[in-house]
Structures are given as C-alpha cells and as structure tokens.
Length: 96
Image (cartoon, rainbow, N blue to C red):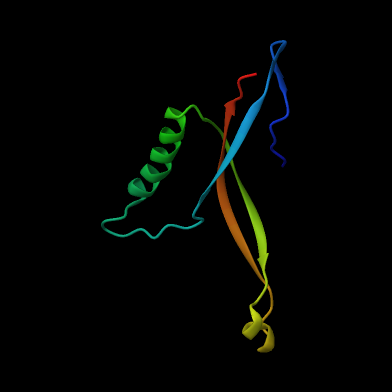
C-alpha cells in the first residue's frame, strides 16, 4: 500500500493531503496495572492528540523489515532477522 501527497478528488474538488505514519507496538503486556483498557487508551489518546492537530485517522497497517546482524553477529554466523512493525496512518489537507 502506498501513501503520498498526490492530489485526490473529492466531489469534483481537488484536494492534496500530507500523510503521517505513527509506529505502535505489536504486543502489549497486560497485568493488574496495565490492563487491556489502559493499552487501548494509549492508542485512543494518540489518535485524539493528532486529531486535535488537524490529522485525520485513515487506517492501520503493518510492515516487516529485515535486520542484518552486526559485525560480531555476522562473524558468529547469525542470520538476518525479520522484524514486524505496526503503525497507524493519518492525513491532513494541504492548503493550496
């Protein structure tokens, strides 16, 4: 999926958007003080904060990167590791 600031048409009005991706953890440890509600509240607070700054929530997505071992790891025969990432996507209209 590709996101860019190319113009988009909305009801015959050409709009241009700036996009922003914000990384979030794939997994959250839950215990007595860090409940599911607390974890969800973190996402909600970030979305509301960016919304107050004019950013519109669009969706969430994921991306997997490959991390090569460092010099010592390479010498010891370590392989590259796949690292998953989760992020949420926002957009803001650009004033033309």
